Structure formats: structure tokens, C-alpha cells
Amino acid sequence: MKVCKFGGTSVASAEQIKRVVAIIKSDPTRKIIVVSAPGKRFPEDEKVTDLLIKLASAAETNHDIEEELEAVIARYRLIAQGLNLGESIISIIETDLRNRIASNREDKTLFTDCIKAAGEDNNAKLIAAYLQHIGIEARYACPKESGLLVNSRPERVRALDEGYDRLEKLKDEPGLIVFPGFFGFTKDGTLRTFNRGGSDITGSIVAAAIRAELYENFTDVDSVFTANPTIVDQPVAIKTMTYREMRELAYAGFSVFHDEALMPAFLRSVPVCIKNTNNPDALGTMIVKERDHSFQPVIGIAADSGFSTLFVYKYLMNQEIGFGRRLLQILEDEGIPFEHTPSGIDNLSVIIRSKHLNEENSERMVRRIKEELEADDVKLRNTNYSMVVLVGEGMRHTTGLAARAATAISRTGANIEMINQGSSEVSLVFGVDKKDENKILRELYTEFFQESPLYT
Ligand code: ASP
Image: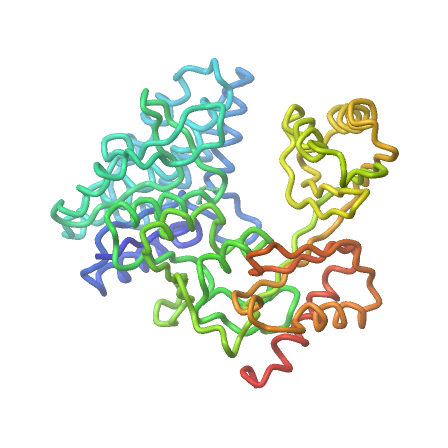
């Protein structure tokens, strides 16, 4: 039994939904379909989720919401018309949206979550209605009734294992199940959405719960590539990679699969396949527990920017018990998460995503580190720093890879400001100036992929 997730572009229009249906019909083991909200039909288009965010903010500020509401309904109406569905599904969607707008607004985040989730929820209802209309046995599954449980605020939203037993029952139901992505419910029945792009997470949870033989994640590319195709010309496609490799690449900017979506599938060893709705015959990329990495130690190269560095220097830091803990406690107090902490004997750098910093918390953090930890020097370089990441399970067993990467970077004339390799050795991270990012990516690609005999 397979779980298939279709992303926003795959369900953005009636034509795309017809392709989805053809894919489902071609394989009877495709049992549960997890859907996103309608996404972009062309580059300048707006995703329904973004339209819903606008609707939520109009409602919160007590503006007239009719224009924003109509923009959302118009998208569904166009889809329904293209699928020859009558007006009844549109009135179901309109009533649903108006009920959400009338719901409790006390907690702004929860109110926005409730409106945002309407994108996938109504799309799942519409697609189930279409399947029934063309004579396929199918039903919409409500995440609340099916048991997709999540934790409560204020923590970051994540699924609770307790819901898995109930979700598992979906597999015994007759016909196809159409399940909306992106949200779940707390034990007291409050709706919470995952982070943006979170329908991938729903798909992974459902696939893990029913112990699917495969979780197929349909998107708009043929596979995951070894590098970003907008930077490197025609990069090689990845046929097989491990969960850990995908996690590292997703973290560093490979947006093809959500980095939070791997864990549920990984824990129950459900293989994941990334496939293209517009080219379903292409093999796609398989994500599995282990791969033979003897010929291909490096699987991909990624980069992400928007990082700042907090540099802390204190003479004899290495001998001061509790220094690191107290430093990180200050970050915790300020609600600032950190990414990496490369260190020397008297200094420590903390790499932070700049989006978590503002003038106030930066000033307080620096002042507190100087005063409370009596640091000799504290500097926050709020630059647009980039992390270039080389990823591959085979790095653990291959000597000289770091040297090859550093030599390749030196050929670009760029300066490496930081190097970090975790003991798992699945990734090697280079902190560089944003302006050098693309040329470094191209040079690393040449070094590890174009000159490798495997790819010639
Ligand atoms: N519709 C949501 C978003 O645009 C979730 C998803 O598509 O996965 O982020």
C-alpha cells in the first residue's frame, strides 16, 4: 500500500488534478492521497495559502474581507468548473471559510493557522468530490477524526505518536482516502499548521502510521539533483540517497522535500520516492536507510544564506566550566535558536539565522554576554553569511575529501571563514561570504561531480 502526496503545483488547476487522477488510477496500490492547497499555476501566480494569509490578516484587523475571500473562492471555482463539478462544492467551501473567519481570534497564531489550513482542507474535499463524480470510490478524511494529533502551543508544532494507531485504521477502509496536508489537531481539538510546505510532513506521518510500502512525494521536478539547477548547469540527478543525506540537503536549501518530513518515514523505515506529477514515468529519487556509497561519497552540494555570526572571545575559555552552557542559556532566554558552534580554545562562534535577530535582542544578547560571562570580546556580525554544505554518507570513509573541497574553494579566490564537520561526518559545512556562494557551488560541483569518472 502506498501513500502519495501531491504538492501545490500538482493540484493548482483542473488540468493538474486530472493528471493526479491518472497517476492514482495507474496503480491500485496508491491508497491514500495527501494533498496541498492549490499552488502557483505560473511564476507570478499566488498560492492559495498566501491568499488565505492575506484573508486572515484582513479579518484580524477588522477590514472588510469580501475581496480577499472572493480571491480564494475564485481559485476553487475555476478548478471546480474545469472538473465539471456543480456549484454545491463551492458553497461548501464558502461556508467553511466564513465559519473559520467567524471563529475565535484571541490567539492570533491559532486564528491564522485555522484560516491557512482551509487551503488543503477544501482542496481535499474538492478532489474527493471529483473522484466520486467520475465513479471512483473515494472519501475525504478529516485529520481530526482520523487522529492526526499534534502538540500544543507554545512549542513548535510536531505530530504526536499517540495518533498513529487511529491513523493506521485508514488502511482498512474501502476505496481511496483523500487526506488534507499541512495541519493536525491538539488533544483538546485545536487546529495547528506545520511550517510552510508542511504537507510533506503530513504525508510522511500518514505513510509511517499505515507502515506504507512506499511514500511517493509528487512534485514538479523529475528528481532531486546534486546541486541547484538554477546555479549549476544541468546537474546530475540523484537516483538513491539516504534519509540523513536528504535531511542535510533540505536543511541547506533543497526545497524539494521538507526537512521536517523525514523523521516519521525514517523511524518506521518507509522508503520515500520523489516523483514528478508532470512526468510520472521518470524514476525519481529514492530516499532509503542505506545506500552503497563506495563510488559516490558525496551526494550533493547545497548552500543557504542569511546567517550571522556571534563571536565570543575570553582568555582561558577552555578551562571555564559551564561557559558554553551559560552562553547558550542567554540565547535561550532571548528565544534565539542556533545552527553551529565552531570553537577554538579561547573563542567560540555561534552561527545564527539572521531572521531570528533584531536590534533589541541582538543588543541585549551581546551586552549580557559581556557582563554576565565577562567575555573579553563579543561581536555580532550581522552579515549575509552563507553556509555551503557538502553532503554524503561516504565522507566518513574517504580520506582527502575536505582537502579537495578546500582546494576547490581556494581556486575561486574566496575566503573560508568557518569550517564545521559534525562527528557523524555526513556533511561538511563552509561558512563563506554570500557574494562568493554561487562560484563556490559551481567549483565544488566541477570537483566532485564533473570530474568523477562515475558521471562521465
Ligand atoms: N500550502 C502550504 C504552503 O504553501 C503547505 C504545502 O503546500 O505543503 O506552505
